[in-house]
Length: 91
Image 1 (spheres, rainbow, N blue to C red):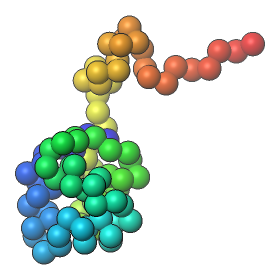
Image 2 (cartoon, rainbow, N blue to C red):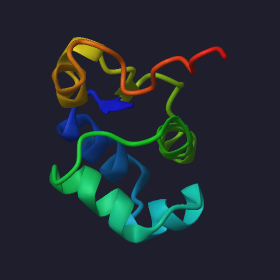
Image 3 (cartoon, rainbow, N blue to C red):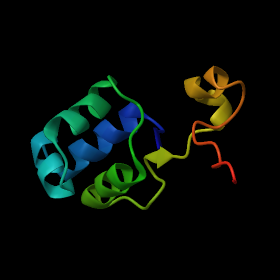
């Protein structure tokens, strides 16, 4: 999942009065995961992580995170325009 806006994440975090560590604890995540998203070191995470953060902050699903477009994925070009997860070959 792609973080829509680091600033929006920070605003939601501040609005709840939670620290990064508190958010991580409530969401069941590691502090580093939350910190990397807040600081911009990372802009993507798993669906489970995105939903855990949105739930812990009291946001509706999809408020802070969205599905990335395949064309925006660096792995897209690496595989010649194919998904990172190709369909298995049939025998």
